[in-house]
Length: 355
Image (cartoon, rainbow, N blue to C red):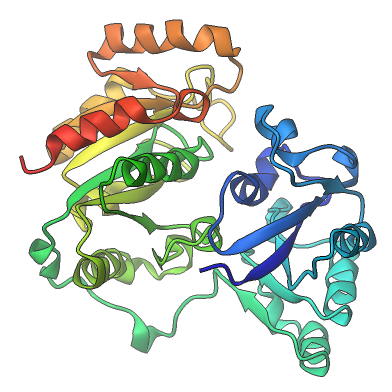
């Protein structure tokens, strides 16, 4: 499914919350072969080492010229510049736009997940046409005629559906979802990720829809449609549904649709134990983990079968004790799948098949 070689543009945002898309692509993608990451702040380092202290073979470089030169030295040709950052207000700086223009002039296609649609920039589009390149805005809403209302056909789907939700936004839901998908595949269990973000599409999720681009009246129908389409085409044993935000985050109260319209059978809850306030909401304390579990199970009657943790603010040696404390508090087993793989979560899901 690899579409081509990609340079990831993350100038000034790598290893920060604004670089989430780049982080996902460095860790895993089936859509591109990642050649390098652009961010002068970490130039000369290995992107995987910066993120997870694991060598990835993906260098961080200072500029587009450095990225192209690095590719040439390795005997490879870049075909895409992927915008892997989310600047304030989703608006690119003048410098970033100049870098994109330069990339187009070098013959690179542009993939962007920003709300600031580059395909509506006449200067960039004219350059793309003149250089026979393409600009894809992953978050651009589908035409209304192509959207779906909820119909009830979701009940035909026989796959075991697991929703990965969060106790907050920007908490690592997508990363854990992919790790669990890969773990299930490794165990010989046919699995598909139902992606709900622009990054999961960029990582190669065949069945995905960026929910933030969909008019509210169609969200339930789009979730149902993509799940049903996956069932008809793939017949997977398991579907992992990528959540967004949190049921209780006041700015991003999301996740209801995956349970209501996606008809998830069980939930895995992603949690950052050291985080005290909701992302983007200073002064709004995160509800206790036990209360968030009660909300999910009480409103929807869907059992939370595991807690996956985001280890921000923790050392690797502290993680096991934190997981044990979560299990003692909630009665639900807790795991850090990024640090310690997903074998235990895969075993739990495997035992649920056929129930």
